[in-house]
Image (cartoon, rainbow, N blue to C red):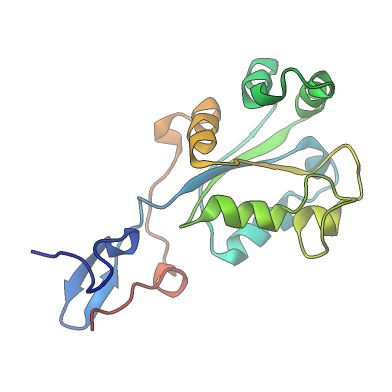
Length: 184
């Protein structure tokens, strides 16, 4: 029976099978997931492909995508934490004003990595090299939405996708992106 790597116990990376060559990765269906919405301003500016490319180049696995008009009901649930803030109604009006590309990406630690890649909330404050820092100078619209916690991600994904719309598959280059250390 396998009890984990010496000194580390069983970890997320231990979803693997043992062979004579050591530990080999298998499908990583337990990886963290996040909802990423490419918002109306990014769609209108033809930035969807460039934004998705950044996440894919980082090694994130796309497991769901839907080009849709966000409804007022979805928007009010998505942004419920901002309900009492003065910008709430404008936020709802903006996210429902034109189509968005709603996606789910998967990787270990994806929520923190995706938020760093997106940058500060508004482009005028975001560092160069981030999505908002490179593609936005707005003090109002911010191109993308990303879940801020695992709990939020779970709720947000359910808001836009049925379970059968999120596809679990093995990424062909996973061994290069998510190496599993050999048992030594």
